[in-house]
Amino acid sequence: MNDSGYDSTQPLLHKRAAGYEKGFDGSYVNAAYLDMTQPYAAGSLYSTVDDLYHWDQALNTEKILSARSKERMFTPGLSDYGYAWTITRKNGVTTIEHGGGINGFNTLLTRNPDSKRVIILLNNTGGAPLAPIADSIRMILDGKEPAMPKRPTAAMLLKTHGESGLAAALAQAKNMQAGSEYDAGSGELSRLANQLLVNGKTADALELAKRLAEDSPKSAAAAVLLARAHRASGHRIEAVQNYSRAIELSETPRAFLIYTDAIREISALEQKSRR
Image (cartoon, rainbow, N blue to C red; front, side, top):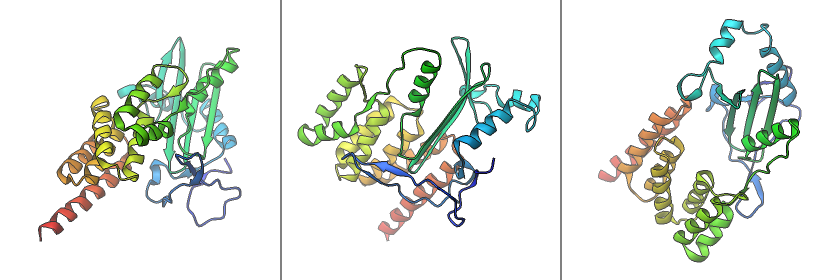
């Protein structure tokens, strides 16, 4: 693996990819800067498809890990999670995979050990639907007709919100989700809520964030969104409560630092307002 390492900004890396995000108007912008010392072991590595293929091939041998170590790593535990891998079995096929996301990037490495099949997807345009893309690739490899990923709807829902309000946007989302062409699930509704916060539509963002948190009570992302909406609304106690809940729900170690800092910042503002 000659093209993998820790993604410090100082070394010159040949063909280092930049991260982008797609705006609600369809244009792309540079992803927000993130110092890679912050995510550290949770997401600061860089690699290539070729290198990750070499890694996959090594996992099929005992060059790096013994058979016993691999057995422990690939045995599902809590929520089908092994040692940094999600392990599922469907229709007699075992799938071992792990995905990730960071500003401007998302990735997926998914393995089928019985057939020694691996699919590696690296994307630098924000949150692409990599899981359904991988599923469609498997269908092609199996000689089946692939299913196209559903179209994102947050931009359409934002337009409806601007024209007719939140209730109309939610009704549109419900109709879209009932079909097979559009994705109007929690991810797209979260994007809508975030954009409403950016646009200063705080009351509607808070209402939508509350609905998403009620629908997904064990989602750390939903708790964070609700915390941000409460904070934007001036509800500091509720914001702290939801950041605390996000810490409890999150499986990402860096979440503790990020959300603790947010709680400290809110607490400092509260103390300052009392003086």
